[in-house]
Length: 428
Image (cartoon, rainbow, N blue to C red; front, top):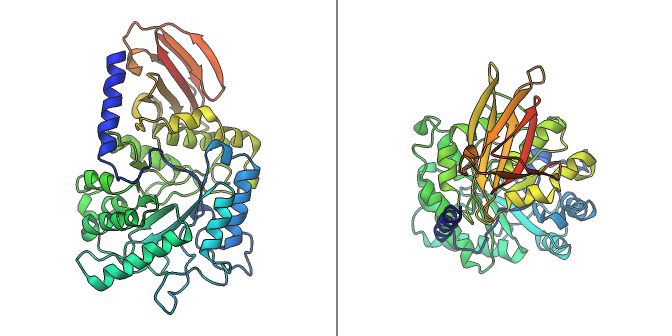
């Protein structure tokens, strides 16, 4: 057992050396506006939900008031639609009507509450919504490069701690140059800025990749970015074929599990997109599945919801420090999944496992069947968890926050439709 543990630690350390060198060793947790608030610029008719400084100030206050900050949710990330035209000197600036205090003031507001400040832009000439982009040049262009330096210095002067960079208005064939180049410029500010890239999504969705990972330069992406979006923008729905409902994302990760597991490393994380708990499109059971699966993948835990309206039962899940510890485990491994049974014609039960830094194994067992499906009887063995087949298992139920004690070399459960169980298991 000790030899296995040491091997996993060495692998994680080697991977860490190949990640973007800006000091980040855990995936971010916090809140992002896109799925819940979209590109709402109309503050006259939609004052509570429009993209404005008041929205992000309220989110900051809610993260503190409802106890999220204490559990590690510290990022408040603006997405698209916050910028106005460049000013007379060509500098980036927020829309003055919706951000009248300016971006530095907003950053100061967040920092004063122990939070971090995230923004959005595009590698190309404009953002996906048409706001000014960073327009990173794929060649050595003194004029364009000088403008890029002014832009990243502006971001640093605002106190930005995180940035998500899209790729709507750029040629994806230049991404191998432009995304790494921007990472170098961000590092050059001297301010640690967590760097999220949408880089692989544009390859995965293109005809050139045929819907596979075959043409994605994963090694370069993982060395150049702290995290990267792996699929389409998430939608507030469980299942919408050819789109990004929660089930569709889980299925995508299941299909591409080997590739996603191989590229994960400390300081470099695959991002399946935002956490939707509390929104109307998911049941509480479905929201619980999403949160546990994201934690098993060591993914960013960025909520996009109305924090004041999250029911207490789901808030308890989102703030379960044992689930969060699995997500934030210092090895940063992404779970390996396998189907363990057919629940109904088009749905399965799955077992997802990942080794933790202390030698335990986190195990999530999930029934992805519909409400009219059947319960599934699951038995999990020591061998399935990577222990010796005859090893005795000490099991803790993470969602229930209770120990099941030593259970022999296997343990069983009944999983009802949309049921997920999460365990920390020690091999004895």
